[in-house]
Amino acid sequence: MQQADLISRIVSDVIKELNVSQTQLETVSQPHPAEYGIFPNMETAIAQAAHAQKQVARLSMATREKIIANIRKKTIENAGILSDMAVAETGMGNADHKRAKHKLLATKTPGTEDINTLAFSGDSGLTLVERGPFGVIGAITPCTNPSETVLCNTIGMLAAGNTVVFNPHPAAVRSSNYAVHLINQASFEAGGPDNIAVSTSHPTQETGNILFKHTDIQLLVVTGGPGVVTAALKSGKRAIGAGAGNPPVLVDDTADIKQAAVDIVAGATFDNNLPCIAEKGIIATTKIADELIHYLKQNGCYLAKPHEVEKLCMTVLEHNGNQVRLNRNCVGKSATELLKMINITTNTSDEIKCIIFEGDEDHILIREELMMPILGIVRATDVAEGIRIAVKLEQGHRHSVHMHSKNVDNLTRLGQEADTAIFVKNAPSYAALGFGGEGFCSFTIASRTGEGLTSARTFTKSRRCVMGDSLCIR
Image (cartoon, rainbow, N blue to C red; front, side):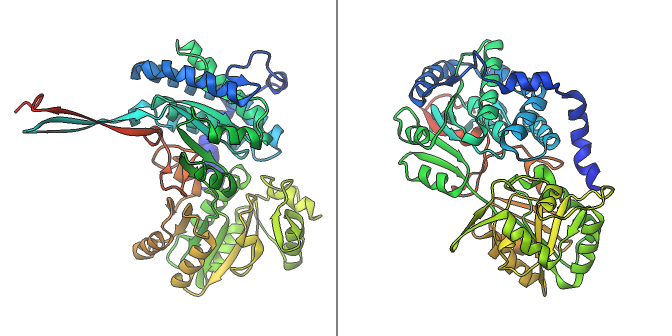
């Protein structure tokens, strides 16, 4: 299957349904006079969410599910608006791919069905282990998946009986807060309470600190960089941390090389490489490296020459003494845009999807998580060396690693050595989110604190209810 089919198969029907007029986009891009759940300061937002949680806790599972169904419906109806808003506001990503992500979360994020009861019955009676809400959850969301994270998190958190206070990334506040508005609109229409999800109109580091310290916040859920995750873990509260990743993809001698190239390009270019699970670098065994590069070029990759790679380094990275950081003007840009930045123009008939180059395992563009469609290729003498390099490049984040191989022993060894929350084999990276793969969707992947892909069950605490010498029928 070609790359276009892998993405367009799921995306095309979304685009047909979700054509957004410029008038609609301009309307929602302006401050809404009556945005549901958006408050001028964090203290008020938390107070409103705490009040709403008392009502949510009394809702039946059926009512929660009714609200969630309406959130799903509104997500699909507004996917075009939300996607266009995010690209316009952040300057990052691909609007068509964001539409597909919204449809994915609307259809594959678990709801109340994820909340199960465990029962023990015997001579001494009956014991139930049930899942209860934490109460009010404080959540930090990224600019890479601004509305997707808000919507996906809220579905799971509400299913578990919680309300949530968001502190969105300041670079994506309009997109995130419009999603909060839609959530509360969906609740109101379904007969639920207001303010099941709330946010502030002016998120800052200070509003985040208030969230971390507030006594009404029982659980923190942080989706972002290592700094903010570390801050949450030091807050003294129970925290779920979804931090950074730098997922490598290893291709060994036994792989279907042609299909591996298709899958790697599809995964690495999805939403211009913004997803944290996306392939960030390639390790190829020496025997098949040239063949892989050949097929990568056939699938829309531009093989950069050494002097062009140097230009990329100076463009996409900012150097300040010994410190290096990403040039935010390059994050989430397409390969064509990045090439133009270094004065490379390609034939307009050639659709360049990704920039590839060869380098060693210590090359800065391979070592750094770029979140751009740039893939460095490292040659490994054999699969053992390839696994060593893959583990090194993953940098101990324990987030994601990918491999193309027909050898079960090789796959098993990489999985054991890397010990990541996600391991995708013989598929594009986005299969991990249920996009063209099995399993549920989540945009909060808590590799650092060990929960992995979060869902409604993640946002619950265990409660044991014991009945002695009764209700045991035998």
